[in-house]
Picture 1 (spheres, rainbow over the protein chains, first blue to last red):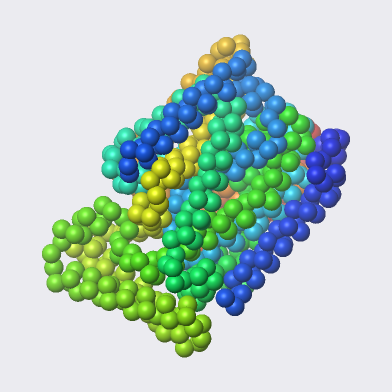
Picture 2: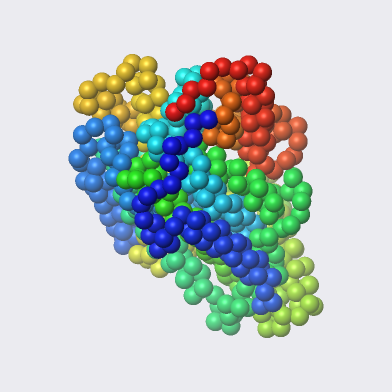
Length: 45
Length: 556
């Protein structure tokens, strides 16, 4: 399999510091957004 | 449209062409033209990726869809952030390190020439026809509201985009996309503000949201496991994931944007930037459409939002028309009273009365449309794309109206520019340079510009003929959705397996397209699932054939 020789990226990741942190942030923010949309749609206005 | 609106629109069009021409003035090599010299910062690419995805029809159609159908469409974007993370971990590093110009070029490094050629050809075929539709759909709508002929709007929109993409290539595409995305954001927030501001004095925002909720417009999360029901949560998250992976991972119009990053980090950040912003942006667009729906609870909406259809219908004289119009007017008054009662007292009785009135109103509107079709001989009538336009033309103050029309132009041009550029890239890199070899910088740059002009001209030609080619275009677009997921399956074989080979990938690709064709023809499975079907079929069959017919694996 032709995997990239180096899957880590040495450059600094702005705001988050590491790739792991930014990936987790993206997933958490999206899950929160989905939950907020659900609450928004069910909120007793 | 007042003189002020026309001035705003003219300033936008002139400004964007001049700016696009200016930023792209220093291209010297093909690398500059197609990948902006691989020097772009993440935020510019991120905005460009976003702008390329938002077409004019996304902007005006999505608000119209929210007006008629609520927020269900939002689920399509729930999977986008997940897809971006997966792409950052898989395909993007492969593309970047392979130093490719096109996604399909990587397939030759991993498999063989035929796999690259077939996938690139499929891209050119589908995207080449689709770009005509990208141009035609907003041109048709804009011609109606601006009182110009379709040919004029097609040539202005297509011609001005060709001008700056020919000159500056990807650098012009990205920087004009940044400006256009800024204009689009201003337009989106302006529309949301106006939609809230235009609510009647005696209706609070909370009351407005209560009406929308009672009318079922906040139906964003549907947990129904049905595969045939449109826009369920599962269809959005699972099917949508494969759709987003296909679009952002295998479609050259997107891949080319992030290959322009100055480093792998910049490329990945550009996608993650989209992952954070896309769902909130779509939410705001849909919410604006829903507030327009609430606005028309208190102000009589036209039964036919398309002004051309309305004018035709006005000339009709028949008792059926009088009856249908009278029913419509009466249904509106009853619904208006029910809506006001509901905002004053949000009890179950008021809600039930409002729902009955809303149902009668929807039926009365369908009745008018049916009489219109019968009396004018029009076979099909759908005014989803005209709802928001009618609203802005009648409710948005002058000056801002010109800006919103400019937003629609910007949304269309940002998609077109990326598509012209990616079509030229695939033609030049996967065919001319692959089969005839690289020439001098001057020759290749010249040919790249010729291809941009040819694809732009082709898009204009298709758009100009679209009225006559209607069903043919639909067939081509449907055909496109057959292989979108299948191409993703080929890339999955490339990066997820060691033993897959070119023969397996090519046979798998055709098998995937065939199976999706069968699913589309013989089942009612919703389109969000098609990409999953295609990708899985290609992966399973392609891998099995690779094991059965082994060949030398080429490493990149």
